[in-house]
Length: 291
Image 1: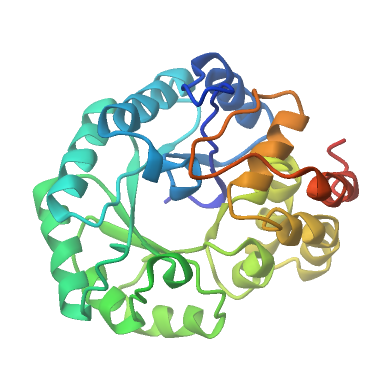
Image 2: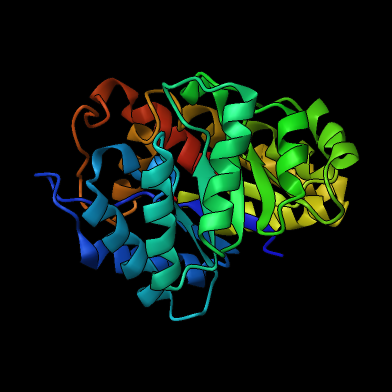
């Protein structure tokens, strides 16, 4: 079971929007040095919506190659087409990913039965550990705890990234799902309390900028050390908030570039962080002691 601070890695690009392999390798090394517990390559924060399928698969393969088995790599392989999600998941398995993360189909707004059949079909097609990803604020579709519980009975569906921010769902999921089903927070702002309440970790945006502090906070929370976890989270609160001052991943890519870890590149329709937000994000970075 992978637990702890799992970084939803940004995808480095140059100013023209071309993929930047050199910076990608630098980021993988940075996260290994900073004790990040696992990396998600091609999470939705990695701009999966604007990479073509070949680029998507390339990034996953490159991250696995750069990690060289030193850290688990989870591949983001979700899509709003079941056949596309199967193809991406199959490619991730061939690349050597430890598991995959599948976002709830977006825009389609499937029924709960449609969600169940979508994930069941992918799990049966590709024998790789699979993590569900529920983020209704982005997908306009909420995968309910009862549906997640049905899916937890499928042997290679091993966990869920729950990004509603609704902490009451933790106990619901624990009560409904099979034993040892893994619960990850997908909401940095509530991740400390999520882990103190029995969660297994967080798939984090903040961890791109303050990886060691996120690791220490999450591990303290998982261990039940409330005082230490809350103390560490106080340093992170501004990042949790201000990395969303514009649409994610605009602010986090700016922050990572500010740390000289990658170039200033992002793909349309997203644009680079506007200057009026620079000091807001810098102040949050200073509070987390990363600059």
